[in-house]
Image (cartoon, rainbow over all chains, first blue to last red; front, side, top):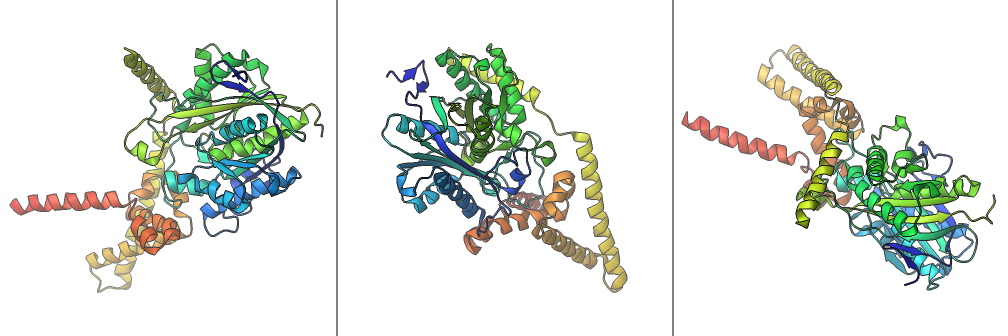
Length: 340
Length: 151
């Protein structure tokens, strides 16, 4: 048990590295704040496929194969694929894995799936059970919309607390060999429910989960928010981020300028997304583009990546249940040897 | 004891979130709904008057029926062209309440779920949005009919 510190945190002593990463996003995201950071921007949200579900799979496949190529590896070198998405029975991830003919673990943590995959992948690699592990997640606005909300062409109004599901996918290759930014620790989150029922206010439902994981992380590792260049939550959105900051302050942790949220950052203010982006493609695309590239540049040296997820289904909310949330955090540190 | 404490924490949080959550701005929303809804009704009246002018033999009732059919067709077409939802973004109730909104609420799921097949996709899901309106309408007209029978 000497790799576990405190209550919820594990330390990766062998320092698995993100040796390659790739992000692909839709057109709307391509016009957003990180347009210069994504590896590939779709010209058409169908990606040449006959349905949005197929497009979502193709994006994932595209991100995974390009991240493997970027690591100068062959598909046969990959020991495990870990991935998930938002669709029922996580069909996008498992249908994508069908093409690769490599061992696959499908995981679901709603929008926290990217951090969950990284934590699991890093554990396999750190323990030297496996050499190369790919972690990938993706979502598509149009598939999430039809599963959780209304048909696309319905002329309804979105409430001001709503968020916009990101069309995008991100993939990271983890290994002990090669160079890249190091995954130092992971804090695995607890399912947290503070009684929010409004399905259009996910940020408020997930903020307590983020608070729970972040506080545990700071306690377990005996660090403070100031020890990080960037504390990045998954997709709380603008309102959710404000709620998280209030909650943290209430518990004696003050977040400064080093705190931000993927959902809040991904779109610009003219894109009419209200609270910002959401979906497991959101944190995956932002991490695998903007964050890791900024780490290459040396702008961020130590990042606490805490993706958040709302663990509801349309059925649970229709039955009047409250929305439980979860948040997993991963600490990524700049590789000093990597200079470009 | 523990459960009581748990409840109060959640109640406090829900209360705090409600206070912090931005509300829909009622006034501009109402103005837009009024304007767009009014324009749709004016177009309807225009079609009605035009029909009666072009076909002098047509009575008021027949003209209104044709006018409704034309409005439904236009809304359906605009939905297909991907324009009706853009009107809905700012018009809100203004484009939902008139019959054009009803047309949109049937056309949009029909388009969306066509990929799951004609029977299990299109036919099953077609009324997924408009269904409750139809059920309520039928039930209320039935009750009204019964009442009308006895008075």
